[in-house]
Amino acid sequence: MNNLTKNTTLAAENAVLKNRIYELESLVKYYEEQFRLSKHKQFGSSSEKSEYDADQINLFDEAEAIADANAPEPELVEIEKHYRRRKRSASDRLPPDLPVEVLEHELPSDKQVCPDCGETLHIMGREVRRELKIIPAQAKIIEHRQHIYSCRSCEKNNDHTPVVKAVMPEPVIRGSFASPESVAHIMTQKFVMSVPLYRQEQEWSRAGVMLSRQTMSNWLVRCAEDWLKPIYDRLKKLLVGHDVLHADETTLQVLHEPGKTAQSKSYMWLYRTSGDTDRHIVLYEYQPDRKWERPEGFLKGFKGYLHADGYEGYHNLPDDYIVVGCWAHMRRKFDEALKGLPEKDREGNGAMIGKRYCDRLFRHEREFADMKPAERFENRMKLSKPLLDDFFKWVHSLPSSKVLPKSLLGQAATYALSQRVYLERFLLDGRLEISNNRAERSIKPFVIGRKNWLFANTPNGAKASSIIYSIIETAKENRLKPYDYLVFLLQNIPNATTGKLDDFLPWSDKIPDSCRILSKP
Image 1 (cartoon, helix red, strand yellow):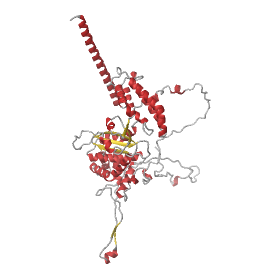
Image 2 (image 1 turned 135 degrees about the vertical axis):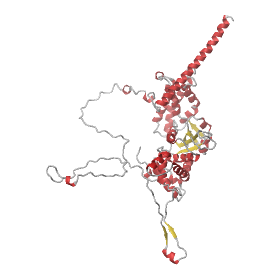
Image 3 (image 1 turned 90 degrees about the vertical axis):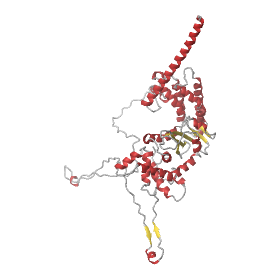
Image 4 (image 1 turned 180 degrees about the vertical axis):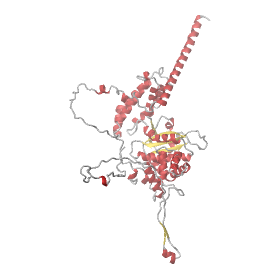
């Protein structure tokens, strides 16, 4: 073999080795990113806010940022020394409609004598201290006694004696000792406070009431199917009449589901109204899978904008559904890429640049928050659209030699380009929102509850849970107290004389004020 051939062979081998070294270095870099991100998720703050947010860039040089060299010096004014009373937190307050129990602390009559001259003392004033007294849940038996009347005269003189019964309300469950209040309490404990039934069983037992979790589960399923489902169905019909909706989904484990193992995943889907209405509707739906046909089936008849995340299933929906992407998910991609880097490499990195593009878009949205839809649309076209164009131009310009497709930044860039048509759609209408955070906030109570009660036993239980969660979350969105609203429904629907379901909807003027949260949050 001559020298030329040897040199050519060595050059080829050298090129292969360099390429292999590059691949291995890229792989190491990828694993380092994943390791740092994993450690952050395990031990770091779950908030996506950080010192790298665009709104916090001037955190440490705020005085310099707002300084005005031409401003006159303030005059020095001497003030009298005073003592400031420590203020109570604005969030700590006692509702004015709570009953007040007054305890009078007086001197015994034989002590109401002046210690100097012996004359009788008189009350010159009072010092008042207020305390909040909490009375734990109490159980008692309500015994309904229905009086039955007959006529003595007819008993003596006629062959037929009329019998008249006093009116007695229908039970919430026939043949059961369940009451509207007890069922509402169990529902509120599980679906608002995330207390599993087995822990409620223990609490009832400590109070001397032997109430099994199986009985409580039966009560929930029966009441959901008999009394709450008609409200759920009516809300669903109203939901699909809106022009703008939000959707999301999360996993659910159902132990005894036909044709599936106990470890397999089922799904709880969520659909809700957007910010363009003051009559909010939040509905959950249990389904055994995550197929795109599920939202199409639930929202049958809907035509309009559907806010969603980047899940491909939403993009297979018919043309009647105009899917709007979520910039919070886009921002999260860059945030994760940033957290996957060593701190020394973060400033000026592509992940930082992408995240700040997103921060500027969200800052504009905060500025537009109080505007009418038409005004918001105009301002978005003026300020947000040029920023979007610059963002996607920047993403296209990222060098492929430095941004590897499998790196966190590469994944963020790929997501941006693949989702561009959906991410830009919030510009189409002033009623649309920049993110799907509204749906994520609404599905969070279910996710928190799932951490405690872990799974549903049967599909019927999962369906009942979806109905109860829907009624409760819709009530909360319309500023109703969940427990009081559930008691109202369970007391009145079984005894309703008309089929007017609208009288029981959260915004109905038939809902008593005792169910409403009248004070502002």
